[in-house]
Length: 563
Ligand SMILES: [Zn+2]
Image (tube, rainbow, N blue to C red; front, side, top):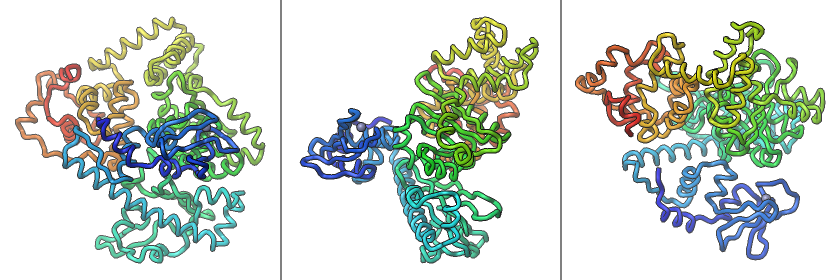
């Protein structure tokens, strides 16, 4: 997407940087400018100045400065285009984009409108839940019992969804409005839609906010021992749990101040840690940590510490987080893993041992490189040639997922040493293995064959140049290494809403289908049985390929390097 410079100028002339910054920072008029506490560094007296005349902000403490667009990028963690779109929407401008057809533009505008409507509905519910918390002694007692103060409850907008099947009817007089179902607040359980009831009943409520601070969903926890203990909003056009982190909006200033983000497993961890002096904590929402989670966090900081409970489930979650973090582990970033003793979660650990002990524990967290080596060596007897070979084979996909750089080379030498090989030998061996995979060596493992098949079917460059935007990260991962791919495909399949542009094009005509069957394809069917397992079925696979490339051509291989 390319946005003309003239549009940027017009946009910056229409928005007011004081309004934009004022959404996030409390500003006070001081002479010609506005002053406030700098959101980019910790301070007690204001040295952050915003000039309405120059449409600039500047911090006399840390030197950060810029305009409305850079503020949204730096402070709200938006990408450039996202920031431009956000501002354009506020002043009612349409972002010009030559790459997009008018129909697509219309569809995108409709989708944005829908999202805005849904967040309004959710915001209204969040407000009602907060009011309910005030008048529910049981819910207040629950939070008090967990040591949560009024200030922290306010900061996180905690609430209470009362008992009863249709409590929200008092908030939304049109209880059968389809928006209530779409927002995930109401469950419709009958064909004719006559059975409607509140999703969240008798639960303490944690509003989930996006980086702009809009409510996009809820987590609800029972007060007692009922099941399920935690309940989240379903996937909706505004809420994708594989992408959102609980507490990120509330934590973003603290993340900058403390210099790192602490990723925990649940909302109660986040709230409790904020109470106990760690306001830089966030949590995944009942899912494994994805590369998208990691990417989102890294917009705010270069240092991430994942904290896991010390049990087997925590260990498994850590492995998933490792997979998510590897593609982002560049040389300037620090990614670490913290394992708590088996009997503890972060909340109970801090209560038992104190904040200092927890801070020390964070300081001793395991760096990604060491965790990678540990994970590869797990249950391998490094005293035997077989064990060392097994370790190396475990390590290869992990190592391959790392971005090019010094860290990657260091890890290679470490692994080579463990394998009793020379680093060059090991990397030669691995690049040979990789080459064999792309020529469909029959000995390749199932995921390797899968990845190679996907590569043939969807050459990476086609995806980046003409593919739906949602697939660009997938393409980037194809470039980076095959390891993430089956996982991403799985994710796309599980979260179809995450791929709104996957609309089904007309099925290719028989002639077009025949085009796929080049001689080589006949000799080596392009999709081994594993791929349909990951994606649904071959037809869907081809349709998506067709949507992405705009043509059902068979010239996959040639066009990959040619475009
Ligand atoms: Zn500053």
